[in-house]
Length: 108
Image (tube, rainbow, N blue to C red; front, top):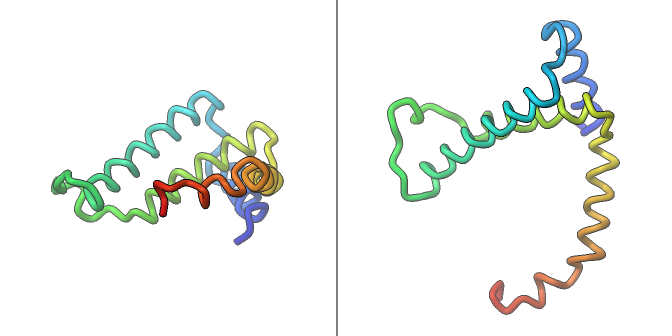
């Protein structure tokens, strides 16, 4: 699925099954919550924290998809074309950081 297809799919789901978008501020709070859930699972999977029973059957990919879903909702609500924005962001990184990391002795 392409980014434009994902934006369209989310929009159609919201319009047919979700009734309407939550407000932008509510979705920002939900995004923060979803990122927290992903962070919790990452800390338990790759960090030093141990799993609680409620975390054992959670899926990192599903948690990432939850974050992506809400981010797409926010993009749709605010008129952001994520495909275009991402392409511009990569170009910015190429210009600003094109050799920054290869010249960083900490990364060698």
